[in-house]
Length: 398
Image (cartoon, rainbow, N blue to C red; front, side, top):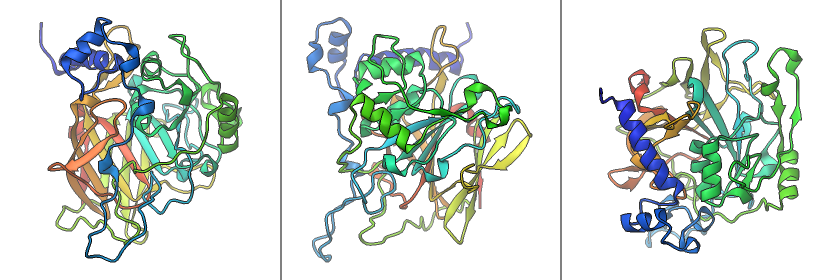
């Protein structure tokens, strides 16, 4: 039998999935995991996502003793700007299909208001989006709403975010069940008798052109209603940030001096799902385009609510082993987060090669260079989790 990279990923994927879904983190010992696997460990002693705190390295460094005293660092967890409230992060799954006039979710609504936008491949070689908001009151109408996948859940789980969607894969439910996340999961399924909380949403037929499954939308008020129905609080005291940001108290900026110029960036998730970015000097952002299989060309990614093209101060591209879950999985894709890998940070028209790691589902994504946290500029961030197989199509230039 020929040993291929995809076969290796499937085998290692099964092992990694078993470790994660049994609740074993990279910080536990093999003996601990084996004891849990064979039922010899008291379930009450296992850690859960609800008791995990983001790593301290996400916190801004303390001011030097010789510098003027600064007020306590209290930044918005998603943008690094001075915090304006105590909202819980809300993550909304958004459809991105664009295969034909009928199978088309674009242009989406509400994405220009998101502080972080995550894109990754799901089944059928399509990509899906997850929009993160710092506060439910910052969410306009958003959608089309789509079902949850564990590669997105694992990124928001350490932050005790409200995960909002309509339906989910069986693997996503396994993570929700194993890591005791049902209390913050709205719109899921009860494949394993996991408690479910229905989402609140509405339909817009969009002229009757697109298929019914691409016509569901929600909004901040509807999400607040669904959370209230489920008894979920929408405030949370964050003491760390999703990425390590330049300190808002000093007004510092990450210029990446000495790094290679990178004004044009192309990220390929599959042949039909590619995102391109072009740097704008006046406002210091990367403006987004997406390839459309329907038209056969790149088109500006715009928010249908305001016709604004999506723009980001930071782009983070993380390469990871990605393959379908073993067995009859329906091609649902598994990201090997435990493997870590190479990453590229784009900001202010330059690029910094670095590394990313995520040692367990309840631990945050870390971005480092030679073991030291890599600082992001304050503002919005596009995060791409990209299959290693698409590395050759990844491109950037000055």
